[in-house]
Length: 495
Image (cartoon, rainbow, N blue to C red; front, side, top):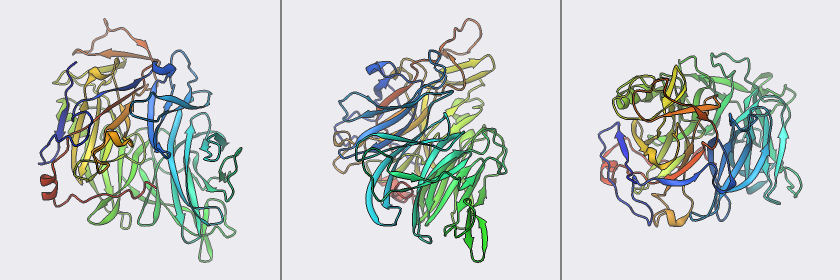
């Protein structure tokens, strides 16, 4: 089976293929799992997390729009070794439209009484209500907390050094909820004490997103906590509540809103707005990076002190150039934060998986998926690699790796397994997964242009989730060193 790598670099950097570990060469992608294998089923693969000692890869999956199970199923799978099998970690719950909304590892530094600790917990969320699940390290079991109607889509953690309180945030709709690590964490209960009241009600905030003001991401930069809501970024004002309401902070003698609008992208429309809020390094300082969900998609870099911003990548224009046609509506990236990966030169890079509609006739033979007679979207698996500020590389996973169109790369993660990295623990194999049901219980693969109706035949949305693994070629060290804008990135914002 012939496997190809399409790498398009939107800079002058060249691509060098230099394998430094005992693993596949760059461009050699292969299947890790497809839905239906190992008695595991999912329509969508949504978000990866590395957790544990020794480490395992956890993946949040969902059965959204599964034609054989309309209510869907929210599950988490786990991989313990590169030669092992994906297994079911937990099935969270079922309900109308249920799927996993988010998954994250929270590295705690303080307990509720602000005592120092070094404890990590896994947190997950579902759509069938605003629910948060926490895995208790004491017994390995998952414990549910419900905040009522809505959904949770993102998690963050922040140490409020003014109030001497460390909080985990669960954001989605109707807003931002918060919790603290209990001082005692016995088996049989959740290790996190959640506050039932919202710290920010996002439903009625200004904005034009049809998703209704969902919180889509958190990031910490220069000691401040930020949240992406519709087309705006909000900043949290630290300090004690001191008699103020749950969504307020006492500043001097007055009670002020806890969260304040900090920056606006200037875009409007779409369903979710800003996506993938992330902290990166630029010129020796922490900056915010955010993608977007809209046809005219862009990736922005924002100064967390001044709110000055630049467009690092015009995604719409870049994909139009690649396809030779209008690329339509886009989601880039799906999750927050955008994954961090280190190449063979040790330089930190961000991964931006995406989905793109493709209504125009592409010049190349790209596969597409037909949702209905007027909605065509890319059926290939692609993601951008941010090699340096303003320097992005497009990686194309061969369509032959999976039995059905990939449609979307929703997330990637660098392998935590030593045999899949070089001696320095870098240049690791990437695990990527995805598919997007796009609110439809049928899909129509279309591998030949043009896509016409008929004679295309729709097939059920079922067993469409996938996980693939492979390595990518990146600019060589000499080229990277010559790029003055390129600076190493740490893991700020990824506690």
